[in-house]
Amino acid sequence: MPDLQMDEAGFLLDGQPFRFLSGGLHYFRVHPEQWQDRLRKARLMGLNTVETYVPWNLHQPRPDHFVMDGGLDLPRFLDLAAAEGLHVLLRPGPYICAEWEGGGIPSWLLAEPDIRLRSRDPRFLASVDDFFGRLLTPLRPYLASQGGPVLAVQVENEYGAYGDDTAYLEHIADSLRRCGVDVPLFTCDQPVDLERGALPGVLATANFGSGAAGGLAALREQQPKGPLMCTEFWIGWFDRWGAHHVVRDPEHAAGELDELLATGASVNFYMFHGGTNFGFTNGANDKHTYRPTVTSYDYDAPLDEAGDPTAKFTAFRDVIAKYAPVPSEPVPATGRKLAVPTVVLTESAELLPSAAALTARIDSRRPLTMEELEQDFGFVLYETTVPLQGPTLLEVEHVRDRAQVFVDGQPVGVLERENHEHALAFTVPRAGAALSILVENQGRVNYGRGIHDRKGLLGKVALDGVEPTAWTNRPLPLATLEDIPFTATARTPVGPTFHRGTFEVTTTADTFLHLDGWTKGNAWVNGFALGRFWSRGPQRSLYVPAPVLRAGTNEIVVLELHAAHRAGTVELRDTPDLGPTEE
Image (cartoon, rainbow, N blue to C red):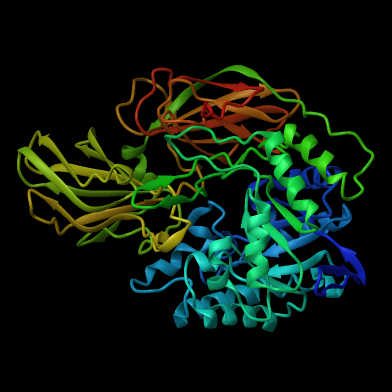
């Protein structure tokens, strides 16, 4: 059984000096049929370990429902890592950040109006303990103490950037221990937060992307003895809508890695392979302005979003070879890609008229939040009536996150949280007209105090200063598309519309869905949710994993929230477009 220990200088594995050469690989951001390929490539780059977070919100979507199969089959992922000869660093949270929806904390906790997340609030701690019990009991055979690949487990995540309650961290560590975690524990923080995030008796590690000497010196000041490790060595970065695609020069990143490894420290690349925020799972940041993260989590990593080696793969492998043996096998070749020049979408269904077929209405005296509706992702359609004809002012205290407003089905404007918009003026054609407000959750905030991020229409909603007291709420999580009433497209739609078409392939391969001329929305292939698109950029294509496709007929569904001058066609190309980079 692997036995990880620590002395004054570093790690020991089975009594021999050991250095973590690890890379981030989140199983929940990669199609499960591609896990083995990505793990093999981690080994081929010279890594001896992979690191993964665990997304609480996906594994426990409701308090009484726990999921660990399919794309969330963590035991299978761990088996595959072990078969590849890789160790594992497990980071179960409960908070993970990761540019992931809500930092991985489930939205149902926010149904409690005054709950305090990441604290000793008894409701939060009881939920954490329950989650750990459900997660870790079946994972005990995968701990190194039981002969499995998991060498160490993280306590919380960058807590020093959020708080300084050592008793809270002690509870998390004790909860892990009560659930049978008997391998070493560790914390991670950025250098300036190490003191606040440290837990006595638990290994502290640091997160940084450059300046290894300074980062490790800060760690050594906080922790005079024991191993030095950078748990998040940032070799790239994530993208947000409306900005540029972030890249980092491979040779510069390799030079920083060389400096780090020359100290004898251990490292975990963040990320080795980023993957994709499929569906609605991207997070957001809010440092006085809300900024949602894009669908791609390519991260400019050694393996790109489609799992192909980049220039960083070779550059990093060359550096690693100076300090440890690397496999003699060549750098893996780029995988085959599929192209289908034009796919015609011949059927459609307008969202507002179809809403009744998709979900039951819930009546209320005020708009209900997504959390009150027991909804994690997607949209809510709110409806009321406007009593008077003529000019009208709509005021919304909090839009979370983007509201499209319609009067008798006609679009009259948009309110965006990102732009700090709260009011919209329009003309009502008749007394008693229907007011419809379609609100999109663009991703719960994943960092800082903003994680208490409830969605929908919050606070006061008024028409000409008067709050309507009769609302209908229709949750639209779009977890399935089976009930959408598609018909042959007969006219150009004026509001949010689903478009559907099919295409044929003889063999499957990775491909990229391009939606040139489309504005904003979501896309699915064979029912698999690819993610969001937005003409705002930078991302201009969506990754389609090969296992999603099948030989023969395949289906594409696109939800366009506005309008597109080429709404009848899309293309599948053999290259991605993640947008322009900063000069």
